[in-house]
Length: 114
Image 1: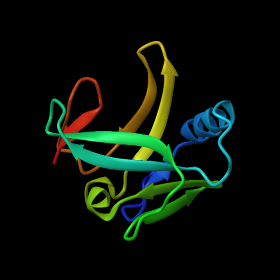
Image 2 (image 1 turned 90 degrees about the vertical axis):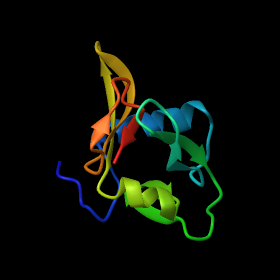
Image 3 (image 1 turned 30 degrees about the vertical axis):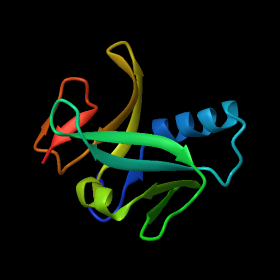
Image 4 (image 1 turned 60 degrees about the vertical axis):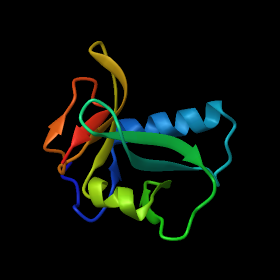
């Protein structure tokens, strides 16, 4: 899947995992995924991913097969065109950010530099 540079997309595997986590946590449909970028980590910037149910002024909204992804405007500058993926393989399990803006990522995949 080629990411659209104006959006944050979610892979099919990540969509299924998000739906599963929402169900396990008994979260209603008004909960969405919030992605953001914060200073820190091995490479200078780190990804943050969580459920939220409060939108803030300036939030960017993206809908992927019924799953709402929200990102604050500052973080979106770093995340435009990113795909959120999920891996459940032997080499690691969890969410991954496939970010075309990252010039360098750390080995754990949780931080990056631009």
